Image (cartoon, rainbow, N blue to C red; front, side, top):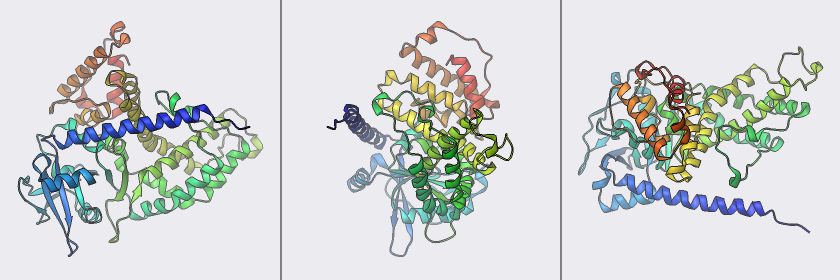
Amino acid sequence: MLYDDPTAQLDDDITYNNETRRQQAFDEGRNWLYKNPHFSLIHVEKHNNDTVTMTMMDVTKADTTCRQQLQEQGYYCLSHLWGRDAKNYMWDDSGILAEKGNAVSVSAVPMRIEKRATLLALLKQNPGFWWIDVFCARVDTPLGIMGSIYKYCTACFAMMDRSSQTLRQLDQGLPLLIEEVSTHFPEKKRPSHRLPILIGYEDKEEDMDEDKALLFKTTLDKYPIEVQALLDLTHSAWFTRVWTLQEAVLPRQLFMVPETQSSSQLDTLEFSLVQKASERLTTVANAIKKLESSNQIHATMQEEESKSILDDQYTRLVQQLETHVQEITVAQETYKQADALDEHDRLPCLQSTLHKFAESTRTCTDPVDFVYGVIGLLDIGLPRMNNANEVWRAFQRKFRDMRVQQLDLHFYAICKSAAPFDLSQADSMKTVYSSFIREMNL
């Protein structure tokens, strides 16, 4: 006689309840955003002559028809790289941007020449409502609202400094690679009612032996195009900037498009495919690495004892995936956990996030962005300031207040003295948040 697993029903019930709560919170958050006077959108309308009209729209003053369309359709976001000399690439809108009603006047925006045709193609393929920073963000826009803007969008499109060919190869080949690897090495599911605070994927470790290790390499050898394209994608500068971390983590859906498009049809890659491939490849590869380090592989299998089953290309790919893709995936999982908790119970998740920040090599051109670029992931609001060290002190005070409110006894018990950190001299998130962790006793 077969018996139902009681934990399976518990998982289903918890998943349903969590998804219901998340949707309710999402709807409430989006409605709050629509009422925020700092939130503007572009209404993109495609015409019969294959042109688009972009109208700036103050959402709080939009007419009934527009508001109803916005409620039904939602809006899209754009994530892109400004470049270090953005002001040298001012784009006169040349009539693309129409002004109606309470429109915000926009005469020129910073956008590199090679990205403009791609943006117009993207808008033509996806008419509707858009939030694009160079059009919609004003000098008085609170930077703390950026997290909400990306969190409540229907989908985000990231413009990548990679070729159309790379994205096309991954879009076509990754599903096959994922399917074959997952067939041989199925993912271990963790029951939702036993989810710990996510710091890594150690609990998903694969059972590995010599035959499985060779099978994994043989499988990858069948997909040289996809492996090379995946390696190429991970070298995009988009993965190295501070702001793009929350722009990748917060949206419900993320699609990648090339900055420079070679045809009229825009190539699009769903980032979740990259994440699925990354999770399987890194998990299995790390199991092989652990097996090799424990000397369980017989020396006769290798030309020399120190040589790995996985060649240099596969090793580099795994390193790149762990550094760039898994960073986003872990941040997403941790944020989802925090978002499902009561505000006073989120501190462990925030601490986990900060420790991950302390491992990140992401950089930015303006030091204040080391803070402003991630506060959407921490649900912390800060006023807009230009002085880096004023921003740093305000961030410290905000976090201290949060720990006091959540009765963090460790914070009361230990007060560590540390030399003041100069945010203006920071060169990476690792530098910034390693110092923050020391100062905050995290």
